[in-house]
Amino acid sequence: MKTCIVVGGGVCGLTASILLKKRYDRVLLVEQGTAVGGLLSSVKDDKGNIYDQGTHIPVTTGIQEVDDILFNFENNETQWHQFQRLETGNYFAGSWDLETQTIDARKLNKDVYHIGIGEFLSSVLPSSAIDIETYLEETLGPTFYENLAMPVINKLYGKDVDKKRLSTSTSINYFGANRIKAFDENLTRILKQHPEIDKKLGFHKSSEYDTYLKENNFSMPYYFYPNTDGVQLWISELVNKAQALGVEIITNTQVKKIFESNGKIDSVELSNSDVINTELVFWSAPPVFALHAGELPIHSYRPTFRTAYILHATFDKPLNNNKSHYLWNWDPSSEIFRITLYDNLRTEKTHSVSAEVLRDKSEAEFTLNEGVEDLRNMGLVAEDASIKSGFVQQIENTFPVPTKEFAEATEVNYQTLTSAYSNILVSGRFSGRCWLLHDVLRFAYEDINNYAN
Image (tube, rainbow, N blue to C red; front, side, top):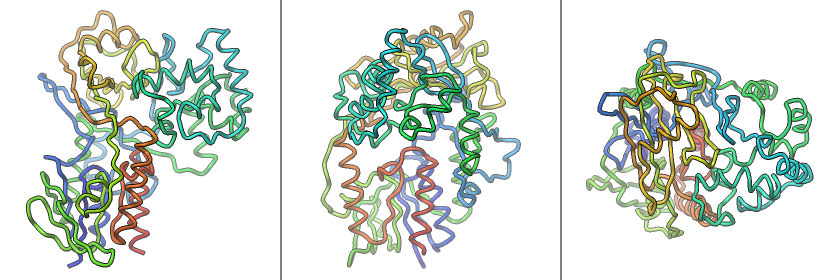
């Protein structure tokens, strides 16, 4: 019997277990939590309305074998809403831009804008800075950094964080703080022909990004969302598919000890005292746990975590936006940074919304009234709309502040683990190689194929 152990039961671990079951007789998926799914879970309020634990909209990877696993279900047409364009937008300087998440510098005071434009156009050399503050000052210019990017960083990582300690190698691209709008569409199109300006100017419309993908022969993505349920339905579908293939899923269990010989893992001992012989370990949990189980050196760094507060609310009237699937709020007047609009994602119209806030542990808890007031002030909720139900979900230790020390520890621990054992594949965000889920899944697929070959 050829056996493979998959550690971590998120989407990456579930997908990997299905891929690996085609190559191994026995695949055992080990998850330390009470259920698989990781961050992709859904919750209900006291009226039965369903919300997600954050904005999670499944998207294809462009790899047919992986996408068949992720999205080829028997009830696709009736249970899933499929769409090709992800509609987003952003709120900044008191108004909405429903074409892109990119901040528009033209909303600034004219004097500030003109100073910023001069700095922006004179900054055409590539930056090798490894901290966010220096990188953005050298690319966007000091004025646009201070007035556009810094408020975003404060919202995400805290006003008191030392910006020079924040690494450029983590989530800066994901949140879009390194790109802006600054000119009209025609001039932007011309300026983006310069490679360094292209890196810091965003598209004006999502349709322009679609055109860019087609011109560069990238596969067009498709997005999926359950018609009447939350994203946790996706996890349930993947679990059913894995178990139908014979994948064994064990929850409330950890890898307690790793046994090896000649740089190869022979077996692992689980926290339930079972010892499993294995030919391959696919690790999609934090590498530090594997280092501990293998009694390997650990680059110890205790990151600072932000506490996530997710406002879930349902109203008696539709929201004032029937287009966007999710929105970004970059205006410093509100701590909310991302909003999910469920009426635009699924066929069931409940007038429900989720809004996310990050605070330090020492700060007061974010309240339902605060969140609803912010949504009204942004014009997203009608003045005469009343809240029917809702609550604020608090999740601690979910968002590490991406300091240079954190990035270094992640890289060192990844290298230590992968060089110690010839038959371990380390994937997921914890590998430090990527941030977005579809990129994580692409890496996992490539790692599995390369190992098999």
